[in-house]
Amino acid sequence: MRAVGRIFAALIGFILAISAAALFMLAASVGLTPTDPADSVWFWGSFGVSAAMTASYLGAMALAPWAVVILITEVFRLRSALVYLAVGGLLGVLPSLGLTPMMRPLDGDPRNIAILVAAGIVGGFVYWLVAGRMAGVDGVFLTGTGRPRDER
Image (cartoon, rainbow, N blue to C red; front, side, top):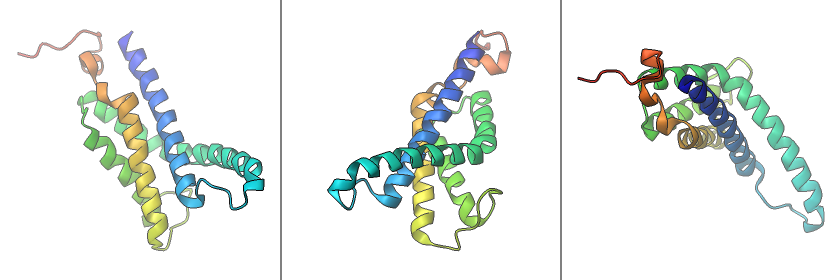
């Protein structure tokens, strides 16, 4: 039963991490203040729609690699925030190298690359806060029984 709980924690952590990364990317790209105060309703409405679209796009790009990371960290009980921050940053670098199939290379634009790397780090940190701190608790994935391994 604990394995089911860990799966739900990983799923919720992934969704929140992708949402945080998308919000960060949007805030870093367009800012958080409208150019004209009279257009604030339009600005925030389009910001919300853009955040949802960005999150769905990021989720589609990051699902497979992040699933591998989640599996590895659960099996080996890697709970360090540094692991999640590094992997998030690495996933942010991949589009700049042209290694993501859904995105064209960024042609070395340092601002966009920095925004993607920082968004990946933000996403990795949020995942660690939600689900990564307790990765592999009680050895659920190692023993399959929900009971801790014998750690002699």
